[in-house]
Image (cartoon, rainbow over all chains, first blue to last red; front, side):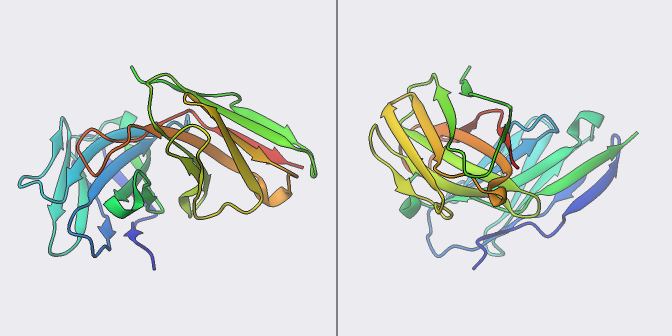
Length: 115
Length: 116
């Protein structure tokens, strides 16, 4: 069964607007970590933000924030004030303790920022 | 800064050739990983390693093998390349440990392999 689901293959956003990228996950373990990565056209995966399952507050890193809704098993990435350089693939990933250091990735969402 | 390097950005090989993809990290990470990335499928784990000379199969190990003789280096080997192994290959590394803040994986720039 798919453990990480990103239902938006592609999205467009106007420059300077906010955008939300969806991610839902499935796990029976109470302890897990959720990650978002950005992959520009150059190919390198860039770590953006992390949310632990026991974290009381939603994670924020600059213009990135994670809308963590534990009961709904969703971990949506919110990018505020989009910039042209935000155009990239975005991947949601999860790590469970039983899997050691392994990450399970979603299919990705391609974000295009329009000027 | 953490640095993960991969031996080639682009590689073209012929069917049946033996292919070596090398990955080196300079942060003394215990864990190293090899993924392949295909459109619409995200990243899929091929093999990973928790320590020198130690390896574990990921989700799609068929047709691949790995070698980790030194802590900083993790090699992916295609014993006999086939056209369905044409893909982007990404190497990553991280510290050992559980699900904690700061234990993210750091990725190399990727190798785009084409098998003709």
